[in-house]
Image (tube, rainbow, N blue to C red; front, side, top):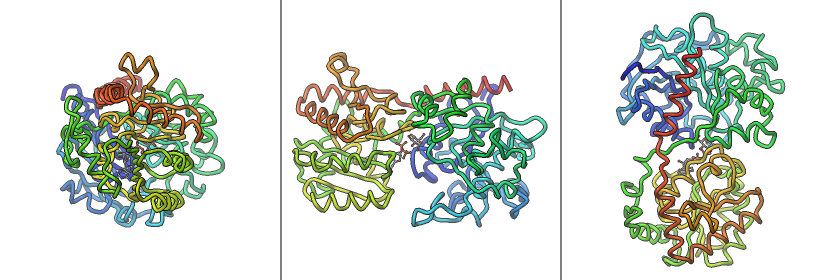
Length: 487
Ligand code: ADP
Ligand code: GLC
């Protein structure tokens, strides 16, 4: 690598090691994309069960005393499974050897999450302060979401030459707010507990800390970067974000094109491409059978793959379900999340066993299969920082129905007479967060579905989209360069 930049990418999850959603996917794919363009990007994450073995990682140096309130921890280093990216793991079995990175089996936050992710943040900062003792000192620490939000605070309070910091916001709704007594356990100075610091409504806020102290902030789409400066999307931090708007940039995520490619997808019943779409019908038929639905090629099949939360507008789908199902349509939902949504979906399936299929749980293979087998993908999110599923669905010839928000607004082009005529349409977009607009939008999609030639054109223009990481990786590279030069 030439005059390579040294970037430490700190994250609480990374595909294929551990993934609960889009952040895991991004952390597994952006660092290798950066390495391809000459950046020495490395990962840092907690050593959850089995990770040391998966990476064949070796101990790095002697155990470290990181926070005075806890036992020493051991750092390990290895290579990500595809061999592309070096990764550092923090081995602290008492904190990280659990089932689930954030919550227990009942969906309840681990009570010591402040310590678990305070430790992650602190070790990241140590790389940026005294990295040479680990054999490698990054010039910039790229933090992600609240779990890494204290890193910029630690760096800001360190003396000497230190790395600069960037925090990417994947979701403002998760903030990591904890009672103030954690300040002492986490070795943060008392003076940092104020409006000009880590305090947020009387609590220690990891996200606020990151947004306040980081040298720069990114959001995972340009539209979300604008939205979070408003009360509707800012979750109370809109004031801080609009004050820092000159240091706030939106960069749309890319997708892992090797992993999400209908032409080379081992999870499908049949592969296909935009010039050979027949395989898509094979997947539809297999998916219908898998869920016990009539294998009719002409019935439009609506698909959802989602965390089941209000963010994703699952309640809006439930609200229009009866009306929708009174038409000739089928619906398949793969998801997990809020117990109440899970129960309502299960009930919907029981009421409509011939037209509704529901799989509750997290299932990577099935996610690919639904993207390929469905005709139309539903993603009516109330807010969506970026969203990956709508991009997968376009690439899989499954036009999405989305709300005009965040990354959905930035990646889907609504089918209007003009965009259909000029071939730029890729899906269906509505504006309000209400069921009437969602229903009208789905009906629009159903009408076009009947017009085979127009539908084919819509599918193909989605499949032609280039959502690969290279463009976004170049934007991150330019940003890293400017921050490192300024610093
Ligand atoms: P978010 O990160 O907000 O959940 P994204 O669209 O950015 O939303 O990313 C979600 C990722 O998680 C996608 O890769 C999607 O395929 C995956 N996913 C979500 N729910 C499931 C599920 N139940 N089973 C398998 N994969 C899922
Ligand atoms: C978050 C957001 C999602 C985004 C993902 C990756 O989970 O909810 O919109 O795609 O992070 O950045």
